[in-house]
Length: 280
Image (cartoon, rainbow, N blue to C red; front, side, top):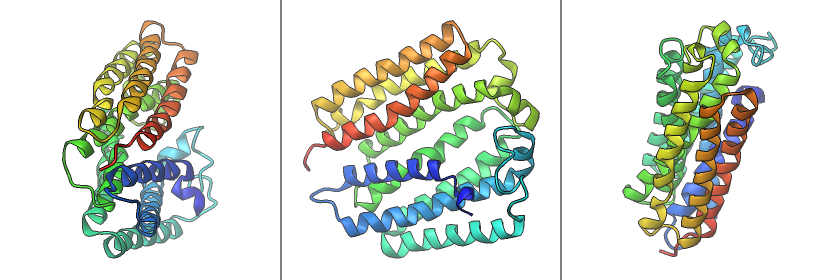
């Protein structure tokens, strides 16, 4: 059952939610509230990932990278997976509504709905699914912010867009590397018609460039200080450089480099935010 929740992705969701909570807290961090937020978020994230695997079990069976997952491998029945996924999702949203606040619970429910009901089916129809999928990926940091009592405004909108834009070069690089797998699965990805990688590189660079100024907004609106500003600038330039490399010469090595740079970028940026948060 644990494999259905995609633990690594769930851990990333919890990292962004915790960062959002800390940044949204005004005077002090309420540890009990933070723990409750992470419990509810983990349940909903796990349920969302499980439902994604339920709906894509036929696709996973056709991909080398995913055919050993519990459902396509036959290690778990679909009925058991549905009961498990539904239970932890419902409990998670309810837990957030009771133990945190209604707005955070609604954001968690929106994350589930946009990922399972929109993004997952769109993967079979259009390469624009990546843009839709970036929305639920960016919502957990907003949920963490509202759980701590942070008000909706420019600051949290900036956090959303940072997470939204960060995901796109990350997923574009991965989709190009596994384009044969995606082709066999029947999913619609930009990379399927991009053998030389130029279109993937162009879009990855575009999103990395767009991310750079957005990543500086937390300092401009008073959430973080100067150390974060200059650190985000350096990290953003590194991300842009990795995207530029893929544009000029798309090779598996450069695509992996962009992917690994993206993995390093986000935790480094969030750590800078937390360490250089400006006192309310």
